[in-house]
Length: 610
Image 1 (spheres, rainbow, N blue to C red):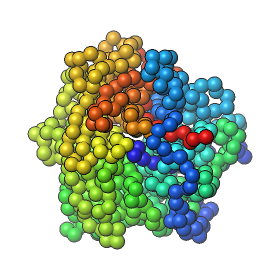
Image 2: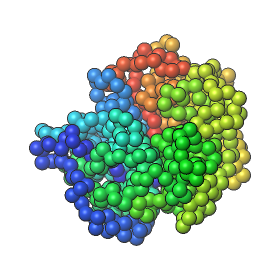
Image 3: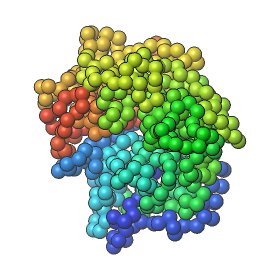
Image 4: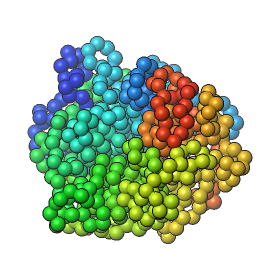
């Protein structure tokens, strides 16, 4: 099962900044134009949609690797990840040739006018011609990740620049955009209001679950398909949302773009509802305060058991086979949502002493959801160190009543060097000042996760230490640790160097080489390799924990029945178009070169058999 097992087709359109355009090919539809009858109709479709027949979901065959590069795709910007992005797509046949000693795999094109990639986000989505254009939209940039639907027919494009809040859907066969939305803006975080961190398809592909991080909200797009799995309609259901903060105030409705894509085909999608049914209250169904920092004076019966939930920015709403979403939180704690109701409903809630914060790795195996806890993306994370892993019985939730901290998770790993931050109290210090330079730092940062094809093992990366921890999915025990810097995966920096060294950026003598900085990852359909995003020397996000030297996608060959692995090559990405200046990189090297590529997510898309 893939790390982020499914996703969806998403995007959220702009309101005031392009609403007045005269261009007939690009306009916005307000959710206020839709009726609640449409919402009810869409809910009925959501409940009866099931897996289409005759789709290839196989365990083998040809595939593509898609890497999401957060850097700007234009020159002249003064901020990182705010205007455009690149999508890198490589074919498995070309990757195999590279592994066999042939030429480096060349990236594929996404538009009719380009012979090869990478694909510019500004070209994939509407923006050609006069009038309003995508490139004119505020904060249309920072491709944080693309995630596939269960049938590998579509991916969601999560465009993460703060204040933007755009999510798109791309056809994996043609590489054309089919939809673009903009999420709800709230006042949860002053002057930001909305952003799309990640979005996941439900297990049956009937909905897209959207992580509106800066809006502190989980939202939903209902998906309609034909018998072959083709998406025929997408409806952003504003009544399905769950607000996770307090004192909800809506600043702007969700919207949907209508325009022509790069192939001249019209985008689909609309918005329905009026937010009247959305869960925007301060309390959970159990009567506890959703967001509480343990110091605010509230009624005794509203206090959270098992710690606090001081900052409910949702990180990743990882979806499960039981139609649940596990929503990790920036300040620690967890919400579990039932996805097929309107609004979606909280059926599980945990404090930050039970599950620590900033986790963004999720993998389902052996009937359990494995989640992690890492370092905060905020500046406070620069002195944090966290590597924690939890497992929760995915069938253990009572979906009729809501109980705190039930089912109770297994804490299967909690590193002894973890700092006492974002929920953890088991460490010996509140700070770790050792930075992030290889061989010098002792900090840890748990992030991406993936299960092996047979579900026996779960692999979790450490973004700072450049290692992968492997856990037995049945016993929960740590089964192995392998590194991403040596040629054998066992010798560390003392042994023969792995391929990241020869693939490293070389235009700054002070940059530490052979530093993969692994991030999100996915298993190949045959179960033989993990494809892991490698960060760049100018990281767009989490700069204090994610500086790397060989940006692109690392290819890890698994061994010992999936219990071990080693890095065998890197699909290198490069961006010298972006000229954003490099500012101070906390705990790292203040890189002085021209490379700006920063690949944050990597997925595998299986090709349908002919």
